[in-house]
Amino acid sequence: MTHPKSWSAALLTLVALACGSSAEPTATTPTERSEPMMVIRVVVDVKVDSVDAFIAHLNVEAPKVRELAGCLRYQLFRDPSEPTRFLLYEEWSTEAAFEAYRSSELLSRSFAVLGPMMAGPPDSQYFAASPTGT
Image (cartoon, one colour):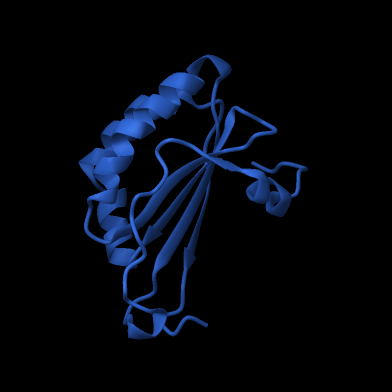
């Protein structure tokens, strides 16, 4: 899904919601890791009549995700200029930790609830940070 708005400008203006990350960055620096850290960004447009339920569901689910091994950050942001557009930003210590979550029953159950609230398919991108931080 492509939007004419500049992503950098939109990301600078996103507002953190109540389910903001409580996870603190770990003491592990990029040079201490043997595997790349994973960063995931998911942009989703939500049906107008589902926005409150979408936020409420993620407020319940986010703490569960943050407790999973390897979850460094799991945070929802809302675009203030398009209040039905959300960014889910995730950081995982390794690709294996992310894959464990991605194949988990927790994600499957959550997507079963959130999927019908979405106005279209989510726009996801996955990034691997170099173990050396470069």
